[in-house]
Image (cartoon, rainbow over all chains, first blue to last red; front, side, top):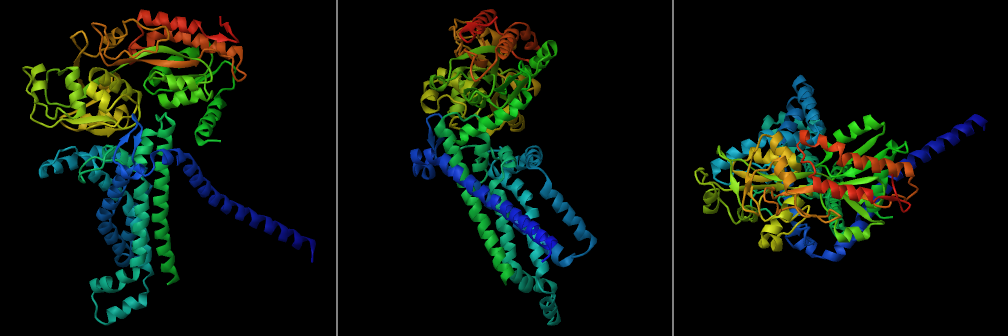
Length: 296
Length: 343
């Protein structure tokens, strides 16, 4: 064997080792973030015990902490955002993946969706506060509830706009994956376009669409800035979808800087731990569903 | 090592990049005096050719950083508690630099200025007074047509020195507030919605009709908002101004200046006011600090409470009254390096 060959072999293996190392660092990073959160939240978990998850009072002055109001607030806003956004993203993805595939209008809509996904969340929050809040207030006046304009509903509206690009782009990809010959077979049997969509495309692509929705859910879950600006930051369990509330992420953003007592800081970190675990679960389910889809 | 101790170290390391010259100073803390400090430090820096870096990370952050010894001075709107002071590695001095006041802003379609008493304010923020035309408010404001509308309370959602001053005031004037809610940078609000920062509260009050909230005076002025005159301990209705804020401090004060001046005894003082402080270690020789640095800090502090005071009023901060200035001067004189006073 020639010397150059050996040299190349060696540099090849060094390169491979470097790549492996970088990948491992990512895993170690996630692992150590989780570990840090667990260690730092231990004092709070030990002190508060189960009341951390069962109570309904968040009172830094008397050091009584329950994070249940924020878990409820987070789930409510995220789920509501999904309910609002899913019909729109589904419609958009059907149009992009089936009707306008390859057309100029499809490229335009795709570009706009990418732009939507790239807007910093503080801009969404600002826009929500300036434009959406007065509109929601008018609506609240009409249906006869206290016209605050901010609250869970407004936060969900903002979130739904923010997650539309995510659901749409994943759903569009899986809709494009539906084999042409199946669709053509259906058409040849006299199916209308609507029937093809309802009976062929949606059933075929449903797990992919579901995965897209779940990933968007994960995104809505952790959104901080935009939500903080319009949700009303009230630290109790909301009584209606128009009531002000608070989410886990926005409580951390609001209170961490001025938290001084050790227990207070630890509790905010435990809030981060819960948020991390829940996001991991949601994301893992999403990935799992996508994986299953590609095996098929 | 704990996360809580690594973070200040990291921030400290970043801050100290600017700290190349031995006389340059680094501070961090309260955001309330930040515009004033920026102006003061840039003027002082030009005059004496040194760099002073101040990061507005919040009073709590300033205290944490000072305790970790990563900065030369901390900024705080709140007085450090005895518990915090006992954790400190050295004696910490509270040097007042100026005063601020918290004003009650409201969004009502009325021309005349609203008058409020401590009772009414605490009842509104406790959620006991729910409507603007409540007899208790109407009685104080005869001749003003108050709407038959629900009061929307707006408070700060982030931890803040402003909230600390406001809740300190409420705890002094209402025993119910004291027992139910208490004093702190974040509290468990009985009613209302939260806005992030003074600008967040100001924004919400401007947006939500029939709302009431509290912000620092400067934000009410900048946003051209209506704010209430408040009855002080002497029974006078006082409109918050820089003058009435300074007057709130015209009372007997302890030598260490750790005093809350809310609900002041001063007859013409505005009742929701407070000092903002610069916090320093009394003994400046720690962690290899040079005498040059200690002297630089000493000179700066002297300048802030004397020449520097001329920058307060144009930026809507209330200057220190004479008595407070004297006490602050005495505190600065007590700073030592290796046990000896600094000249």
